[in-house]
Every structure is written in C-alpha cells, then in structure tokens.
Amino acid sequence: MKIGIVGSGDVAQALGHGLAARGHDVMLGSRDPKSEKLEKWKLGSKGKVSTGTMEDSARHGQVVFLSVHGDAAEEAIDRAGAKNFEGKLVVDTMNPLDLSKGMPPGLLYGTTDSLGERVQRKLPRARVVKAFNTISSAFMADPKVPGGTPELMICGNDPRAKEEVTVLAKELGWPGTLDVGGIEVSRWTEALVPLWVRVGMKLGTWHHAVHWAHP
Image (cartoon, rainbow, N blue to C red; front, side, top):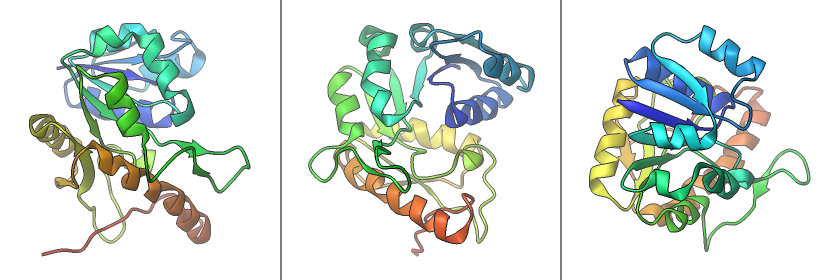
C-alpha cells in the first residue's frame, strides 16, 4: 500500500520506519524534504521510502497519517491540499498540546471540541480515525510495554475506516484496538495526554502507556 505521512518528527519517522519495514511504500512530507534528518531517516529505513513536500505525501498515500504538532495541524492540511485527502483513510496521530507556559503542557482546546473533530470538519470527504496519540513514539511499531502491551485506543465516525486502522495496528505489532466511539471522543483521548506527560515526569520515563484491564 502507498502510505503518506504528513510530518517529519519522531512520531512520523517511527511510523514510517515501521510501515516501510512491513512492505508499504512510505513517503514522509515536510517543509524541508531534503533536510539532513530526513536523509538520515531514509538511510536507516528498511523498505521503500521517500520524502517530499506535505502536498506530495498527501497525494502519494492511499492512507495518509497526520503527524505534526497539534498547533500546526490545520496549516499542514492547507499546505498538503484538502483535495489530496478526499475519499482516503486519514489517521490523526496528533494532540493539541499547549506548551506556551512550558512543561507540563495543557490543551489548546478541549471538552467542547478536539483536534480530531477539527480535522474531520476540515476534511469532510476523508475518513478520519484518531489513533496512536496516547502513546510514545517509541511504541509506534513493535511495542514492548512493561507489564504488557495494551490495545491501541481509536475513535472515528466510519466503522470500516476503524477496521482498516486495526489491520495496520496489528501489522505494527499491536494486539488489537479499543474502539472508544465517534470522532468526538477525541476530546477525551487527547485530554489523556497532558496526564500521560505528568505521569512520565513523575516516573522519569516516556516508556509508559495507559492500560485498560477488562475481561
């Protein structure tokens, strides 16, 4: 499958490594596609990888991941071109973190809106699923979480799109997904992340994850 990833940070690179290693044709999209860090990423990847502009990556992907900082999300979509997402599965991995006062972060908005909902409104003809936003970039592929790898929390309005994300998650080594509802539930999965950061600061690690114990 051709996969586009709009973004070039830790999450984008980790997802790109993992998906390319499983046989997908991955393109990372960046404002600076020929940067040193992306050349290094290409050299360290197994499989078919490339870099381009944000528009290039959105056009390339049959599936498109959005993996930029939350405060740059809507600008990134504009750069990529909304038409390039039409009809596609769009996986929103982002969080609207407010770092204006430093660490730990707050939220740019929450309880009555979410970044996931904003992405879906901005891309009404795409099938948006919120996923991979409640975990460390270290766990994007081949997750080895102390105490056992949990299911990956996802939400979105399109049942088929969520099934497709579940297939990709399992390919990447996740045991499965936990579907917590429609895209409006992004308000609450995103709200977990400032708490996740605070727990990490307390424990002195970013290798931790929320694990729901259930039958």
